[in-house]
Amino acid sequence: MNAGKVARYGLLTGVMLVLGYLESLLPVVGIPGIKLGLSNTVLLYALYLLDAKSAVLLAVLKVLLSAFLFGSPAAMLYSAAGAALSLCGMMLFQRLRGVSVIGVSIVGAVCHNIGQCAVASLFVQVRAILAYFPLLLVSAAVTGVITGVTAKYLLRYIKKK
Image 1 (cartoon, rainbow, N blue to C red):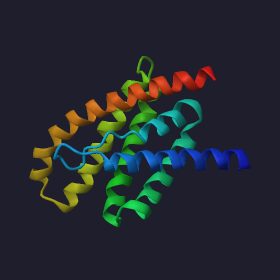
Image 2 (cartoon, rainbow, N blue to C red):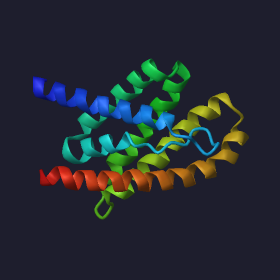
Image 3 (tube, rainbow, N blue to C red):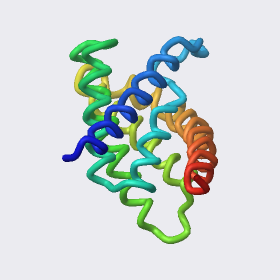
């Protein structure tokens, strides 16, 4: 890997970490686990303007570094499951004709919540997760649209440059 790629990955990882940290400072509406997912704009950038390998590398770096800097081993487990499923969903839907970056973002957000709920079901009663799941899906759709619109305009701007 050349110095330019290392610098790019370092910069993108830093942006994801800062966005994730800033999200943690935003007040939540009293519902744990709901976040905007703005760092996913970086993963969408990687999927659309770099390649899938870059997106996977960035996701792994974000999960590991976020857990080390801001979280715990349990948080890393939730984050890893969500990130893995999210990235798989985004990579799959990105290849489908007619699915926009906003649609890919929504799929990523929904898959992230599915991954986290799957892990949570190992530690908490499955009934509690099922009761909470519809709310998470609705919030994922809303935050996926916000992140997708952000990524759409970011990608458009970067492509012009």
